[in-house]
Amino acid sequence: MQTLLEFIKKYYYWVLFVTLEVVSLVLLFHYNNYQASVWYTSANQVAGQVNSWYTEGISYIHLKDVNANLTQQNAFLQTEIGRLRMALDSTKTPPTANDLAVSAALAGYHFIPAKVVSSSLHRDDNYIVINRGKADGITTDLGVVGGGGVVGIIFLTGEHYSLVMPTINVKSNISCRIRHKGYFGYLQWAGGSTASAYLSDIPRYAKVKVGDYVETSGYSSVFPPGIFVGKVKGVSNAPDGLSLQLKVNLGTDFGRLSDVSVVINKERPEIDSLRAHFTNFETPSN
Amino acid sequence: MQLKRFLWFFVFLAIQVLVFNHVQVYGYGVPMVCILPILLFPLETPRWQILLWSFAIGLLEDIFTNTPGMSAATLTLIGMVQPALLRSFTPRDEEDDDAGLVPSSHTLGWAAFVRYLIVATLLQALCFFTLEAFSFFNIWKYLINILSSWAMTAIILTAFESIRSGTSRHTTT
Image: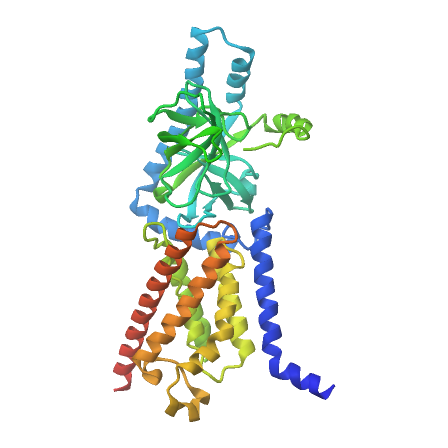
């Protein structure tokens, strides 16, 4: 007993060390695996506030008000273009039931302007924090767009700040299609440069050229169809040899992102409940 | 003394969050300066104190960078090895009265102090990016991250120390 006490007295710091390491690793792996609590990310009140002061200082130099207006306008115009393009297409060929459904769905979207208060670029798990949260009606899995097109998807929400998983996160996965050609695939990021990402699952027989536009497909209820994502920069075979992999130059410049809009779909609950019926047959994706 | 240390921790955390987290050289590596206050603990400091401080500062850094647990685990490890590491870089003649040794370029000598910084920051970079590799692994990115982060951190901390020793020499003479 005496020796045991002596032992503990002498090596107590090992116990403390192991405990602290275990706590750290639990935080790390818990966060990597699940949609964890927002408390220990930079979407919490204090960190959000500090970051927004910082951004205020920085964006003053960047003429933030002018930028905000332009971005907001741009987001509206982009959906408007998408809607008009679809209307144009439907005059050439008689609209199918699907086209009609899509254009009806577009009318159901509206936008909440937000400001980026902090962002990371150099990690594999990049995140962006915006200054809108639950109090502003933000929920998880909403789309976020900026002046350059798609930015990402809301990952976690706090009361006044939210964490966005941008397209430049290795876990991001967004359903996209080639404009006017209809082939669709999933946009993923492989780390490294924040200027480009990869569009996979494009069939091998698809005639895709460098310079083609990539836009959101609208198959998920997260983004309206036709929002600009980027331009095709290179076409190559996917590692599995069964499909094409396209290198896409992203339209959004993540290094200078400051004003974004959160896309809210009024018909979302309806779509989600429909999807819930089918989750047994297919895995839903964004 | 405790209050002063507390303030220093926050100064370094603020510098890390507001300046160095925005430094990205071609998207690789960030200087991680929060390690310095931990390395400057005097030799006689109780080990539980070093460990708790290291963990706390790591956790705060994590909150700002969205990397829960990564900095906390890394800095706790640094806090654990700090006394042994410091002792190994202490000159022989100082060892007799090393009870109150405060690490700096004055007490250790420039060469030993810089070596101390280099070893500690290498350990930090290795540990941090190895933990990051659990979520996504790419060998080249891993190596470049470690090297660039290590080099930048070591250079910046050496610069800090040269400023610090410069001003303290002014005030003493």
